[in-house]
Each structure stands twice: as structure tokens, then as C-alpha cells.
Length: 103
Image (cartoon, rainbow, N blue to C red; front, side):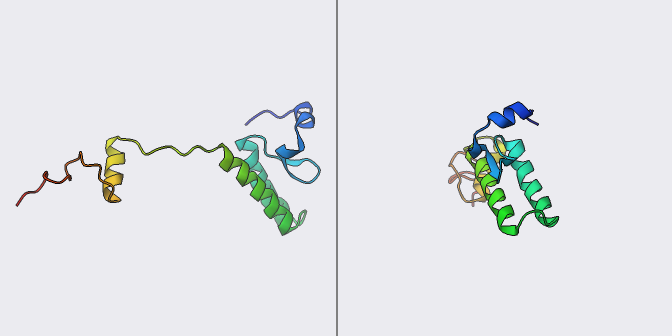
């Protein structure tokens, strides 16, 4: 987990927190996931309202989604099998037209 000291936390901008009063830091993926689970626990304990919990979770999830990069589908054998199963045959495998079972 990313080390978050009191000094680092104090220096962080308000936008790096999901909850009121600079609670629930979401500056990195680890802390964003912790904010989601922490908001759920706090809601279940009655410390925050469901609306507050949902707002914290939404901000944390947005932060997580912002850091994700969609990877393109590869060209390996497993990727080709998946593409073929999905009907996205690229034409260079054994199931290509003119190859495979011939009558």
C-alpha cells in the first residue's frame, strides 16, 4: 500500500479525498479501494448516511476508472480463440475460409 504519512495527507489537495473533512483519501488505487470498503463499513455502522456512502464510493470508483487503460486484444493463440468464438475471425487461422474441413 502507498505510504501516507500525516504530513503527506495534510499537503494533499481536497480533490484527493472522497469524504467530508478530508476523509477517505483516494489519491491512488489502493486508497480508492480502501475508501469504497471504508464507506460501506461506516454506513453499516451508522456513522454515515447511505447518500454519503454512495457519494464516497462514486468518487473513489471514478478515480479508479480514470487510472485504468483499456488494453487492446492481443494476437496470441488464446486471443485468436476468443475472437473466433465471438465471431471476429481475423482470417489467418484454421477456421478461415478455404481451410479446415472440406467436403
